[in-house]
Image 1 (cartoon, rainbow, N blue to C red):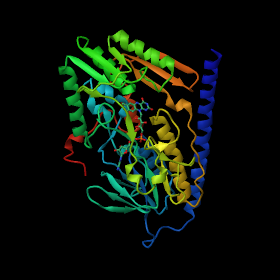
Image 2: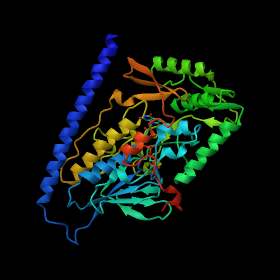
Image 3: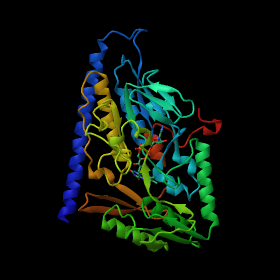
Image 4: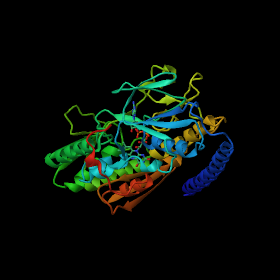
Length: 411
Ligand SMILES: Cc1cc2nc3c(=O)[nH]c(=O)nc-3n(C[C@H](O)[C@H](O)[C@H](O)COP(=O)(O)OP(=O)(O)OC[C@H]3O[C@@H](n4cnc5c(N)ncnc54)[C@H](O)[C@@H]3O)c2cc1C
């Protein structure tokens, strides 16, 4: 009991610490902006330089916002965001919408989150980076070369089989079609086999069983417990939830059968950096970084890494830590681009790993732990779309207004 109280106290202290840090950062960036006002305006001869951001999900999109809104008005830098997706993919609800037909809500329009940035400050390029050199990136399709003064690598992680962890399509229409296909497959099968007992597998198996109670749903996991990366209390609660719904759980087994849904592991997407900085790539594929989130390579001090692809020592990479890393990277880039030193550092905090695990369509467990002590509680979920509307609002978009059907193709 005392340990749990200590955990709560430490969590609250961390929140106050973060608020203090935010207030300080805001004062500092305002000061830098004011200093820049006395500088002469840019002339036609001043060369615009690029701050290139690769990937616009939780990490890259937030880094773009921090940089675009904090660079001084007369800054010679502009932000170039390179991201193949036409929309932000809200990963948290992907397993749910592989069962429930509300898939359009998982794709949030890009753009409004950066509203308010000065005209011309941001350039969007809906493409994939194929290659990175010491001073430029090359695009896959157009083969355009884009030089950079600063580079932010926020390429995250990917799942080999795509859904339910990732969507292997760049347009919203394409992504929705893949999800509709998965919904149809689940609806049509009599025996659903889900492989992988991490969060995506547990959530999908539970949703499918509650939605179609007449079907036989089996969850196969190679480890001793489902949710094995989390504490024993969450593991036990998740297993109980699955059993209560009637999901058959097979542990310490692998299946070679043609399983319908594969929810096994995700891998960091670092291949574009392998040639430039081979020593910085860890055996798991994440990119080694300094506490300032500059890449672990003395020759590349203008290259930063944040989010799932960064090797920051987190067991369960998550969107909250990706966003906080993006804040650190964003502020360090602004400091460096305004003549300062990138001295802001990132230290993982266990509280960032708080998770809400759904166990069927109307129940969830919220959980947080520091490795020794766990706090968790059940909640009733009244909304089938879970936190989708909140995510749209946080990214500046009106739920669920989007004229994506007019897209012919991603530019
Ligand atoms: C099913 C599921 C549920 C989850 N639920 C939660 C949750 O409840 N809470 C939580 O905190 N976290 C959750 N997570 C984890 C969270 O989604 C990740 O931590 C987060 O997405 C990491 O963000 P990121 O920006 O680092 O990378 P990603 O989200 O992986 O995004 C990387 C981006 O980079 C782009 N990219 C990759 N390569 C290139 C290239 N060569 N050129 C250009 N662009 C490129 C991709 O298109 C992508 O948009 C969940 C994850 C999954 C899969």
